[in-house]
Image (cartoon, rainbow, N blue to C red; front, side):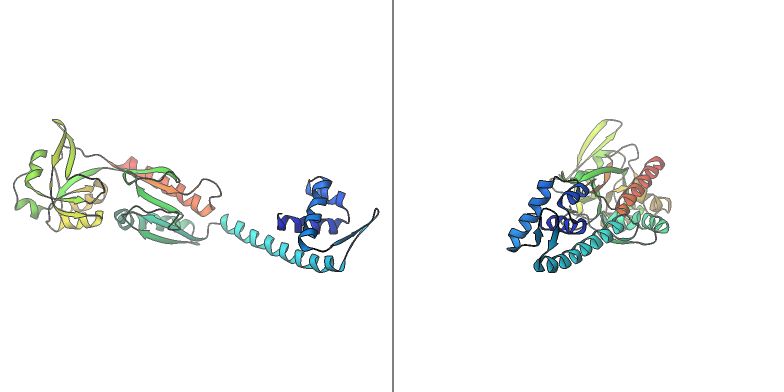
Length: 300
């Protein structure tokens, strides 16, 4: 028995003084309305209504129960109104998870632009390069590296496709053999990401076609920002996002090497639990992220 619905039906019968009129307003059959009230009385073990062919009246138990029902139904209606209003407003906390490199370098400006439009939104940001289940972690939105897996229970939308380049610091390059061809990477220390199932080899496309080169990692890391900083610290050759490495290249702190070769791009997606009942603030932020991603892709 749906207890709450039974209370609504019972209250409506009393309000209108008729099973038939209650059935008409609730868009139910007379039999269904009668059964709701009968089931309620059976559950409570007492009669709530005195019925005659011409009228209805409340028993003492019915009078007491009606007062509590009305209070409960008012409380439920108020709770639903509060939740509905919050889900439809651009305010409250928005919980986001993103890769560390993306979060440190690209996310702050994006959050600032969104918050300038919607100042009542508060961000709760988790940065992680591990695979995060946003449902288990209680996150509203995730920005994830697509090659780490998106999760079949999530809605995924492509966000950006990041160009990846090979970089090393001038200090490192001065102390090591020249790098003119891809196969010469085997003679260098490399900074590699620790990715499950990844081999210690890099695949590049160049003048001679696709080349797979075994590498000798001097550093394995699970964080792209660590790889970035390690390259700046003369630790070796690193695969870095072109967008994020460019300022250091322009400043002379990094050198873009083996420019005749191309590496596979890294796709980044935005994921969220469901298209249904998506709070307005979450929908607005996803749309905002996608528009920002389109602008970045066009400018690459």
